Length: 287
Image (cartoon, rainbow, N blue to C red; front, side, top):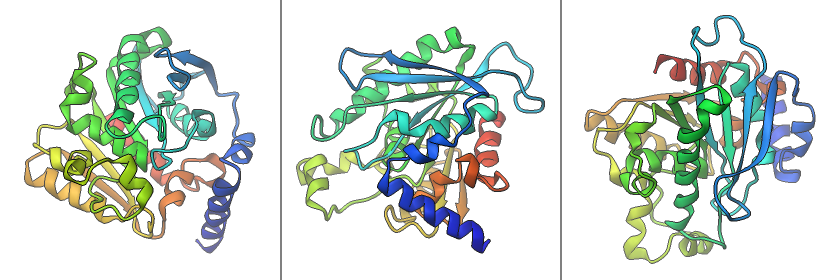
């Protein structure tokens, strides 16, 4: 356990120093095929990559013509991030027999809230329209995100207005996984965040917890109890409100993991026994 903590801590430094490029260099790429730079809109950051498993693996996905699809939204405090840095996430998902779609989306300062919700909704629509072309099942698409990306995925799943612009609704997606997500984070303290989320009187609209009705699709919330960047209360408060409203939600917690540690556990060199990846995969398979 101590060695695992040291490795994860080293990865945390790696993430801060090199945007995951060094990590991705050691991620195998022979088990999947990737189609890069697919435009889902006309703007530079409206592009995505699609990762497809090369070979079926026993006991990974039930025998079906189409595979489950995961649309993964990365974090970065709504102001940074690039899809190419998350090859390790795609490799983890394809190792379980899933198709992984990783989009970029516009971020600050190009857009503010709620503007940054438009591109993820468009990418989700692209997935519905094109998943079958890559062997995916349009009826089994899951929205997944980490940190700010979890905020986006969960917001799409709870607030109808963003998908409605694309002619969709949250129920069109089979489920949602939020990892170390920001769901209930007011009041804001940092000036940059105050700019990103606009006038104080309207900031309540940025909080996924304010849109819980109990009618959401199944949701899995993953939290590291050592997270000091996005407080674990975000996860616990949201889960409690969904449960109180009668909605389907599960919480998986890791007592020894922090914010970066959680996403790092998906990377093959740091996956260990694969507990986190398996929890996510079982959630997807069960729905």
